[in-house]
Amino acid sequence: METEQKAPETVETKSAAEEIAAEAPKSSAEITGKKFSNYNFKSDLGRQVASGEIKDIDEIISKNLKVLEPQIIDALLPNLQIDFLFIGQSKGKLGGGKRRIIRNTQKVTAKAKRQHFSAMAVVGDCDGHIGIGKGSALESVTAKEKAVKKAKLSLIKIKRGCGSWECACGAHHSIPFKVNGKSGSVIVTLMPAPKGIGFCVADDIKTILRLAGIKDVWSRVEGQTSTRINLGYATFEALKKLASYRLLSSERKSLGIVG
Ligand SMILES: [Zn+2]
Image (cartoon, rainbow, N blue to C red; front, side, top):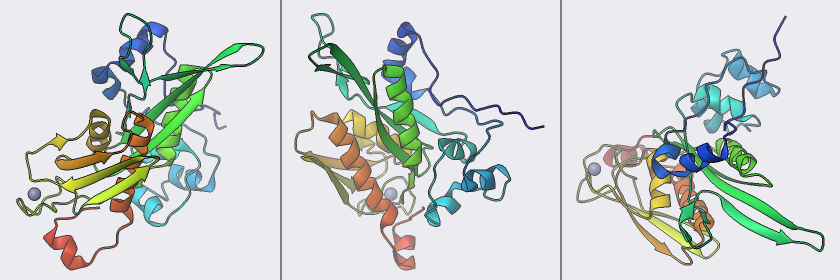
C-alpha cells in the first residue's frame, strides 16, 4: 500500500525568534529548498516526474508545460535556493526604518484593526533557473510560504553569456545583451559587464541575479525604487526577456550563450 505522506511545505514553521534570525541577510540565503520525498503527485505532469518519465526541468520549460505543483520543482531541482527581498520596513523608535523581508500593512475596518503580511521570495539554482513570487496572508509565516510556492511556479530559464565588448571572453558569466523590464513606475535595465566587475546594482536586484547564476552585470534603475516589490518584478521582467529571445547559432557562439 502506498503511504499518503505529504512532503512538508516549503518553509518551516518558525518561532518568532527564529524568524527574526532568518531575516538577517546572511541566514535567509542559507534557507534551501526542501528535499523532496514520497510526495503523492496529483497532476499528470507530477506523476510523469515521479515515474522518471520526465527527468529534466528544461524539458518542462521548453515544452511550455504548466506546473501546478511546486513539488515538481523540488523534485527536479533539489539544490534550489530560496531568498527573500527586503520589501518591508520596521517601525518604531528603535531600529525604525530598518529593511525587513516582511511587509506589514494594517487595514482598519469598523470592527477591528487587522494586520496583513506580505513577503516576496526568489528561488533559483544559481545556474540559469529563476523564479519570483509574492505572497500575502494574515500571518507572516504563511505569507512566506505562499511567496515561495508562487516563486517556484513562476520558474523560468534564462540565457547567460558574455555580451560585453570589453571582455568578449565567450564564457557565460554575464548576460548576452542589454535587457530591461518594467513594473509600476520602476524600469530596470541590465547590461553585460566584463568579468570581475561583479554587481553594480541595488541589493535586492543582487539577490535575484545571484540566484539566477549571473556574476557580472551593470544596471540602471529608474522610477520609484523605494517600492521594492516593483524593483523585484521589473528585474524579473528583464530576465524574462533573456528567456524568450530567439538567437541565431552564430550569435550563440560569439556571445558564449548558454541556456
Ligand atoms: Zn566575458
